[in-house]
Amino acid sequence: MPQTIGELFAFDTLLRDDEKAIVDTVRDFGNKRLRPNIADWFDAGSLPVRELAVELGALGLFGMQLEGYGCAGASATAYGLACQEMEAVDSGLRSFVSVQGSLAMFAIWKFGSDEQKDSWLPEMSAGRAIGCFGLTEPDFGSNPAGMRTNAKRDGSDWILNGAKMWITNSPVADVAVVWARTDLAEGSRGIRGFVVPTDTPGFSAPEIKRKLSLRASVTGEIVLEDVRLPSSAMLPGVEGLRGPLSCLNEARFGIVFGAVGAGRDCLETAIEYAGSREVFDKPLSGYQMTQRKIADMAVALGNSHLLAMHLGRLKDEGGVKPEQISLGKLNNVREALAIARECRTILGANGITLEYPVIRHANNLESVLTYEGTSEMHQLMIGKALTGVDAFR
Ligand SMILES: Cc1cc2nc3c(=O)[nH]c(=O)nc-3n(C[C@H](O)[C@H](O)[C@H](O)COP(=O)(O)OP(=O)(O)OC[C@H]3O[C@@H](n4cnc5c(N)ncnc54)[C@H](O)[C@@H]3O)c2cc1C
Image 1: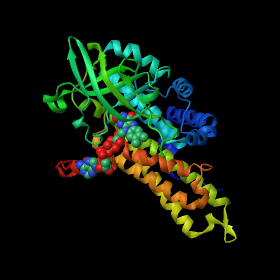
Image 2: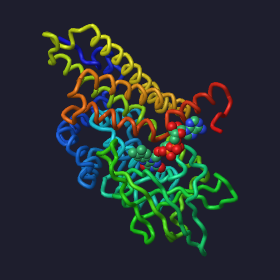
Image 3: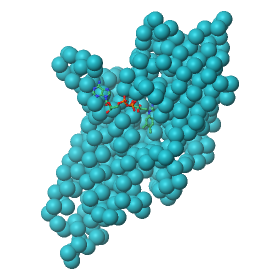
Image 4: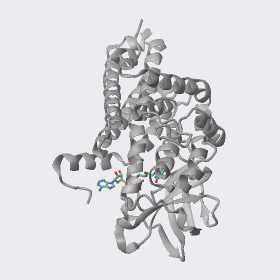
């Protein structure tokens, strides 16, 4: 009997019983509720966001690594493993969980006032309210310190003006965590976060259409035109870029695990396909060149999973450094994308259709390679850690 990749690496031996239970629950939900629909959602470029939000909330996936406010309080590793199972179905679905829990909810949970936490977190963890996180601007992606979105005082109120771009869920969100410059003279130190209900006058979020990647995920702009907010809308707990960057670290951690899920789904699909596809009168899996591809991909995938587990344990034991998360994000997304492309070759022409998940994962992973810090940004982070030299500029 052939072994699965998990059996070959004995991955189960790395997991505690509660972690195995979480993996089983999310995998089961993915197989029954998400997999039968995902190709259609991707094809249509739309997702039943409200419906899914409540279901994912009931599963405890939103902010599952946070304590209180209806959140599950699970370990970082358990959260990562849940991301892995979600992304084994589709990176867009994992993005939904990441943005809601690790970006929007985490920002409020970590830096918000009691009033902000009480009014948003229980609703968001249950999936009754959807959040988004606005950092990137049309002219400032990799370098958010240059942002132009600004918040100016008017009496005790704040008036926000500016534009954000490429914001997951902004067109469907109830609340946006928006990062803005409060004082141009202060440089990045003046950057503050604001909790903005999306029905505030002057707030709009047009959807970005015609994406060829992450089609089962809603992406939009945020346009802020004299958006008036009370002083209580500002996140009191953090100032400067440290705020958004610490949220990104949380979301990147989920990607370290998630990318492994996408790669695994591609490899499992390719192995099954190679076993049933006959070329030159025998199964494709019986050719040495195919086995070499499969073996190399299994090694890369296994290494990625072990790295994710190592970072998960480090995080659970009291902290993981941002540059260590960079190692995981850089390696695991890069490897998952390489695996998706190689698996596509095994599927031949069938590899380009939505009948199989491989090209969908490959296309999705192009976005995952870019968001939450491009590969180049993570290379610069790692390079700086190892040489002591900052080469960003
Ligand atoms: C589907 C999707 C969803 C997203 N969701 C969100 C979201 O919810 N919230 C949010 O705030 N943002 C979101 N983003 C934005 C994402 O984080 C940015 O696209 C990303 O940070 C890169 O910025 P950019 O696209 O402006 O590229 P740029 O910063 O313009 O970079 C272009 C290229 O230049 C390279 N580069 C930049 N600087 C250097 C340098 N110093 N040295 C060498 N190379 C360099 C980059 O690595 C890249 O290859 C999303 C993006 C996508 C595609």
